[in-house]
Structures are given as structure tokens and as C-alpha cells.
Image (tube, rainbow, N blue to C red):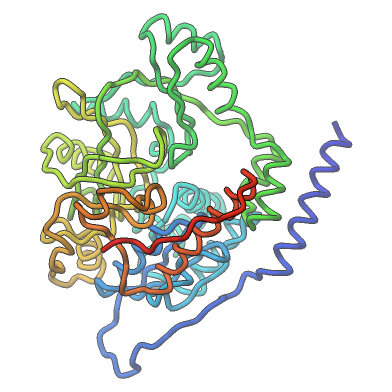
Length: 451
């Protein structure tokens, strides 16, 4: 056991040396084209992210267009580097995440922090706890994190799926039965009581990575073992050395096991809401039905704007109950035969639809800018009159010939050509990797996204 742990520490040291030699915890880009004569002080927003997601770059663009001065802490090679909206970028170091975030906060002194993914929100919660334990609960960092995310009492709730849904049920919100399952015995009891299929979800996961639908007891047991297991050391090392992503190193070394919940299966279509909120009140909201996904458990690629009073009421009640601020998402299932909206989880961060500016009451960046600056809310014109929206680049990456790219609004950021080129390069790399794996001689041509 000691020898195994020693090897893990040795691998960690090698990974740390490689990462530190390439990416120091200092600003890696500084872009400041703003006039010195500008008398209007723009609220400063720090976008904090640990994953190289294009939607985070889209939100940064939307916040800048709404009037915010945007800075970021992110991994090297993030799509944020391909935009013109970010003034400074600081390197996120996966081995020392709280140091990365604290350094960026100290350097930028933002008015607000926007987490771009679940892990980033977890880091901010952990940073708050560290400062509070150090006696700095009234300090700058604690105040800033609460101002950005909401009351600290809500921090543990947003990652405890069963606790969150129990609170929602107390608010008279429709939810599927959900409970933590610690072992196969708990799983068997759940299956006997509620039957199959059932859904298993790991706390703290996102993007469908920690979700499994099981149709039999055997499938459920295999899924539970997979979801509970810590990341393999080989996978963590490969991710760190090849993909420059060190976020799995600590969970692998420390053998951290995930908490898994069983949830009753609701047959129907998926839906999602994104809200901007401030001190427990919803300022602006977007509600969508999901029309297409990358895969059965993955993120949406095509959505349709809807008016749904049940989804709106659920979001408003949970924002008030948890006293939330900033940007949050809520996921639902619209029951097949009734259309009833079942709330299934919360996303304590900006989501991939949050940047869409769809008019008064549906412009999250403008609503947040007004709340932070104290200025009168001025929403931008709708980016489209179409209700069906193909999210770039996901739907294009999924199927370049998708009919949704022509019939709906294809949300391509044409005003940011470098970001578009980066997405095109990503697809080309996917084809190269696929061709090499399959032993193909020809690599399919990459077609540019349709208007």
C-alpha cells in the first residue's frame, strides 16, 4: 500500500513539474483597448472555469456586450483565448485550484464571479469555507462569493441532489422520488419499491457524465459501481499529460468515491431553464424544450423556446428558497402524456443557453449587468425571431447536415471569427483521431457551419 501511494505521489510530482514549467499562475494574456477617457466605470466580472467549454466563452462575450468588463481564470487553451471580450486571463491550475482562483480574485478585484462549470462552483464554495475557517467570513472573498452565488447556506444543497429535491417538494414543486444509495442493498430496496427503469446520478457531475439509466437490477449494480469508483490513476495521468487537464489527479490519488442517488424514471422530453437572479429574486429567465442531444445522457444541441408556467414557478420558488444570486440553471422532464414539469436538478452556474439574448425578460446578461451596476435594465434586441435554436458548435459537431441548422436559428458567433475557426479545427481533429482509430485513408472534408 505504501509503495502504491509512493508511486502516486511520484506521478503527481512529475505532472506538477510539467504543468508548472509550462503554465505559471500569472496573467497569460492582457487585452485592454478601453479608452482612458471613459468616465463610466463598468462592473468587472471574473469568469471562472475549469473546463474548456465553448458556452463559457459565449457567456463572456454576452456579458461584455451587456456592458461588463470581463476577465477570466481558465485552463490553458480555453476558447476564451479566441475571443475579443476578455481583458486578462489567469491560468487555472488543476493541482492547486483554490490558489488559482484566489490569485485571480486578488489580481482582478471583481464585482462579481461567474462560474462556468460545476467544478468551478465547487472550488468557489471550498474557497469560501477555507476563508471562513480562517476567520475571514467578513473578508473580501467571502462577501464576493456570496454576492456572486447567493447565501452560503445554499452551497452544500446544490450538490446534494436528494436534499435539493426534498426542499423543492416542500415548495410544492413536482419532483421524482430521489434518495442516496450507498450500496447494492440500498439499490435492491429502491428497485423493489419503485421498479425499473431507474436513473442513477452521481453528486457533483455534469454534462451527463455522472448519469446512468438502468433497466434491470444487473445494469443498476454495474452502474452504481462505475459511478461510485474514483478515477483510475492511468486515466488521471493521461488527462494531465496529454490533455493538460489535471482536475482528476487529486480525486484519483485520494481515492475519492462519489455519492450516488437513485431517481424514479419519468418518461417524457427534457427541458431546461436558465435564470439570472439577485438576492433570491429572478430577474430574467429562459425556458427551453430539448429537441436534440449529443447522446442520450449528454448535453442539448437543439432547443426550442417555450412558455411554461410550471417551470417558471419552480425556478422562482427555488431561487427564493435558496436565496440565490448570479446565473443558475434548472433541468426538468416534461411528462409524456400530461406535460407536467418534473424538476430533476439544479446547475449552480451559467449554462450553455444563458448567453442567448431573446428580448425583455429573456436577456440574462443585461439583467445581471443592471443588478450589479444599479443602472436601468436595457435589454438588447432579440438575436432571432425563431423559437428553435441550434447551439453552436454542438449540433454542427453532432451532424453537419442536421436539418435544424437550416430550419432553426444557428447560433454561430460570426462576430468572433477566431472562435469559429477554433471550433472548425476541433472538428478536424476529431475526424483525424477517428480516421486513425479506424485505419481510414481519407479524412472527410470539414464543412463550415450553415447560416
